Picture 1 (cartoon, rainbow, N blue to C red):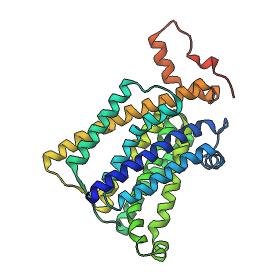
Picture 2 (cartoon, rainbow, N blue to C red):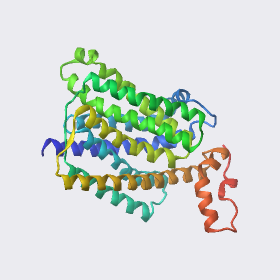
Picture 3 (cartoon, rainbow, N blue to C red):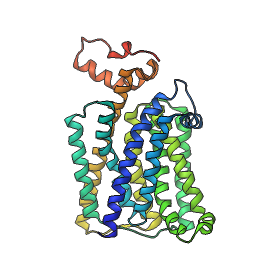
Picture 4 (cartoon, rainbow, N blue to C red):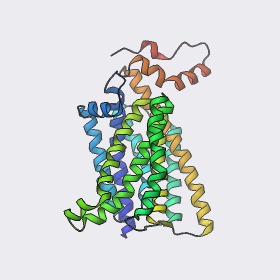
Amino acid sequence: MTKVDVAVVLALLAAFASAIGNVVRQRSAQEITDREVGHLELFRLSLRDAKWWLGAGGAIANYVLQAAALALGSVMLVTALQVTALLFALPIYTYLTKVRVTRREWAWAVLLAAALAVVVAVGDPDSGASRGSLETWLVVGLIMGPLLVFCVLGARYWTGSVAAVLLAVVAGSSLALFAVLTKAVVEVVRGGVVPLLLAPEFYFWIAAALAGMIFQQSSYRAGSLNASLPTSVVAKPLIGSVLGIVVLGETFDTTRPGLFVVAAGVVVVIVATFALARGEAENVTEEAIESGRIPIIDAQALAAPRRRRSRRQDSTSGPAGLARSPRR
């Protein structure tokens, strides 16, 4: 097996660990408290939840395997394969909740896998440098910094799905930064502990990982999972790929016609990811509402899209089973 083949295997294992972590932490975020809490307070409460720690274990395993994959492959390759976490999440969620996955969701899953295979095989992304220049990082900071601050502040002004999307953008961007910085950390740590502690990337790497976990949990809590989950899943590979090209000089090793095929594949990946993530989020929300784990007020907000569809299908029916959902 070549280095790239090993990187692909490690990236898929990382996606599997991420799927376990995401499913468990999604459920924890909705169950942890009935109160409106801030990002740090929600994270503090999560640290006291055994279920969250199980999900965090999956996230940590994802980070470790992802780091090993990034030592051998490009950021574009590894972050693109992270989208397969959605494919693994389907059977995991079905096993945990006994909720049946629909044929439509499996169809989107197959389409997503096929499109990813095309992007990886035709694009054949090449690794660039392990560390970016200070000047390049300053430009990235000047562009991304204000945008992420706007998203965090905007999530305090707007509520519901808008806040969930904004926080998911912050989470996905933070995890994309984590992936790019992992290349530098892996390179530096080979020289020992002292060079690692002296490398500025190491401290930004830790901050990016923490920010990703904190804001991902907050995005799950802020509004419908139909808004937060697709956004965070898509943002990470897109922003990670852009940073890999801009900061590390990564490229696609293909012809011009091949680039058009890759572009079409990326569009299909984005569409399939949104469709699949929305389906998974609806299943999580519906199962939580029916079991009564979400308070009635939160349930009404989360289930609104599903209620509207039900009313269109049967105009004579009353509100979906929300009124019968037990309070905690």
